[in-house]
Length: 110
Length: 119
Image 1 (cartoon, chains in turn purple, blue):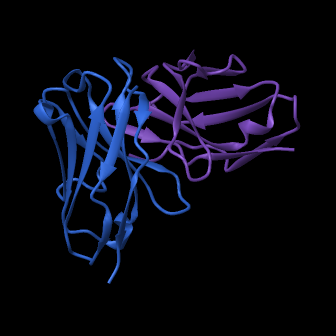
Image 2: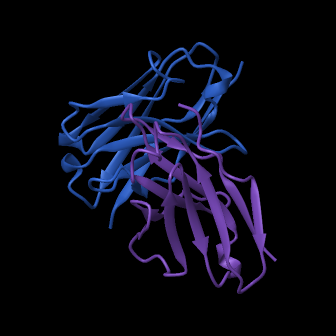
C-alpha cells in the first residue's frame, strides 16, 4: 500500500493554470478509474473536488478538471484564484479493495 | 444537511487503547459505506479502514491491521474505531468520512478528533 506520488509543491500566478500530477501503479489507479481529488485548507477537513477521474463534485467550480493516462492522474486548476491556495490530495481504489492517498501537493497562488 | 461528528480522541499512553465514535445525521446512514482517515500532524492523509453498509465487508490499511477494529451501529447512526496497542505513530487527527455512492471517493467528512499517543 505505497502512497501515490504527487509533487510536494506547485505554484502559479493569479489567473493562470496549473496541473498537479498523481502517479500510481497497476495495483491502483492504473487499473481503476476510481480516482478522486481533495482540497484541504489549513485546519479544515478535506473537501471532495473530483471523483471518477474527471467528474466534479457537487458545487465545485468548473475551473477544476481531472484526467488520467495510464498510471498517472492529473488535476488542472484554471484561472487560479487566491482561495485555491491549499493542499491537494489524490486518492485511488486498489486491487486489495483498500484506498490509497497521495502524499499531497501544496498549491501556492502568487 | 449531512453531518458527521467524531468524538473520543485524547491523550493515551503507548500500548493503550482508545475508542473513537462518529455520529451521523442528515442522510440514510444504513445505506452508505463509511471510512476512517487519519492525518498525522503536518503530514498527509492516510486511509485507515472502511466498512460496508451492512458490515459485511471490512478493510484495513496494513499499518493498523490486527490492532484497529472498525464497526457500526446502524440503529444508532454511529461509526466506531477501536484502537488497541497504540504507538506514537498513531498520533493523528482521525476523520470519519462517507463513501460517495459507487465510486470509492469520500464526499462528506467530519471535523476530526485528535488522538495523541505519548507517555
